[in-house]
Image (cartoon, rainbow over all chains, first blue to last red; front, side):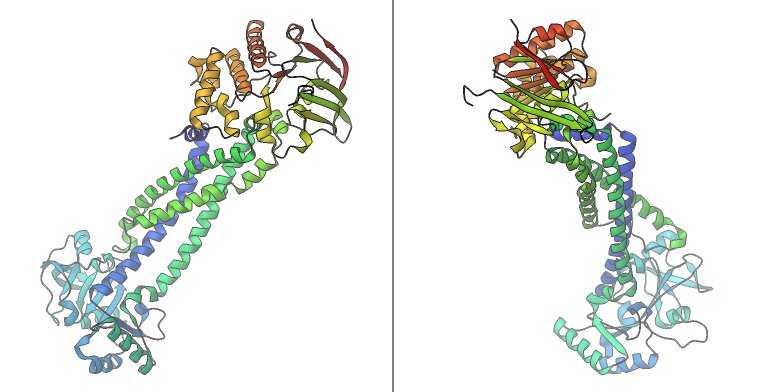
Length: 371
Length: 228
C-alpha cells in the first residue's frame, strides 16, 4: 500500500465509530443485494439444471398458464401428445405440498422413462404403482431417513425405496414418486387429475426447433419452449428478477446516501485541513482524490463485510423450517460477489457527487479560518 | 524575471467585507525584491493577514492588483499549482494535517506539482534534515512539540523553493527560545534560496531581524522604511 493509501486508512480510522457504521451501511446494502441475487441465480440454475439433466429438448405447458409450474395439462391433452410423439414424451407432475416435515415439500411425479435416468445415492427405484417413493438427498439428510424407512406424505405412511440426487436442491429437498401418486397428493379433492408438463426429447437442436414450431402451430392451447428456456419462462423468476433490480437500485441509492452523509460530515470537520492543503497548492481535484481513496476503503471493506453477512444470512434462512429446505442456497457464485464489489465501487464514486460540489465551492481562506 | 523588476508589486490593493462596510485594506501599495526580508507590523486587525492572503492568492482583492514576478495574480488560471510553485506559507498555528506524518506534511506542496513519490520523499527528508528534524520524520504532528511542528511548517514552506515566503506571525504561538530558532531557520534558508520573506509580526524583536519594515494601520501603509 502506498502513502496515499496509508493516509486514507488513517483518515478513515480517525472517526472509527462513524467509519464502522458507514461500512456496515454499505455492508447491509451489499448483503441484501447478494442474498437476493444469490437465491434467484441459484433457483434459476437449479431448475435449468434439473430440466437439462433429463436431456430434454422441448418443454410443453398450458398456453394460458402464467408459467410452466402453474400449467395444467388434462389427461386428454397428454394422451393426444403421447399418441403423436410416443416414447419421446415424458409427462411430469410437479408441485409443492404442505407437509409436517416441510411446509413446501417439492413433489415430483415422473413416468418410468424418466425414472430410469434419475441418479440414486442409496437404495433402489420405486416400483411404479406400488405407492412407494424416493426421497431427495437433502431431505434424507435433514429427516435422517434411509431406504426402507417410512415418511408421512399427504397423511399416509409411504415407504422410501431410495435416495436420489439430481444436483438441483429444489428437487433434492423433496420426494419423487410415480405420476398417479403425485397427482393424488397435488390434486385438490374433487378436481380432475392433471399433469404439469410434457417433456420431449429430440435427436438434435434442429429437430427440437421443428417440434416447437409444430406444437405451437397445431396446438393452440399449448406452448412449447426449449428446455434451456424453461427457467426464463417461469413467471416467479421473472418477477424475482425485477425484484432484484429494484432492490439493487434501492441498495445503491441507500448506501450512496449513507456514504455521502459520512463524507459531508468529514468535509465539515476537516474544513481547515482542506484549507491547509489548498494553501500549499492542492487543487480541489487533489483533495477529492484523497476522499475517493477513503471512500474506496470504506466501500470495499463494506463489500467484504456484506458478502460475509450474506453468507451468514443465507445459512440462517436455509435453516429455517418455515422456509422449507432445498430452496435457499448457502453459497453464491463468484460472479455475484464480483457484481456486489462493482456495486460498492459505484457507490464509492457516486456518493462523492455532493461532497465534490461542496469541495469545489470551498474558498481556501474561508476554509483556513474555519473553526 | 527581470533584474530591475520587483519580485512582488502591490498596487492600490483594497479588500472590503460586508459590501464595503468593513475595509480590511484600503489602497496599499509597495514593492519587494528577491532576497529581502520584509516585516509587516501593526496592531491586530490592521490588515496584515489580509494582505498576506491576497499576495498568496488565498483571497481576491476588491480593488488594485498584486504582481509576482510580473504575473498579475488576477490572471492566474490555476491558483493551486501557482501557489505551490510561487508561494510558501508559514502560519501562526503550524497548520499541519494531523493524519499526515511530518514527512508527508512537508512533501504535500510537491504533490500539487506532480513531483514523483520517490523524489518527494527524498527532498522532504533532506529538508527535515536541514531543520534538524530527521528523527521526527515519521511522527504525526500530535506527537511532537509546538516548536518542532513550526520547524516542519518552515520546511514545508521552503520545499518547492518558492520565490516568495509568506509568514503570518510565525513565532506567535511559541516561547521566545523556539521562536528564535524558527525565525533563524526561516530567514537563513529563505536567504540561501534567494527568496523574499514577507512576515507579519507583532514581535518587535522579530521585526528587527527584517531588512525593511512596513507598518500598517486601519488597512493603510503608515510607514515603510529600511532597517540597518
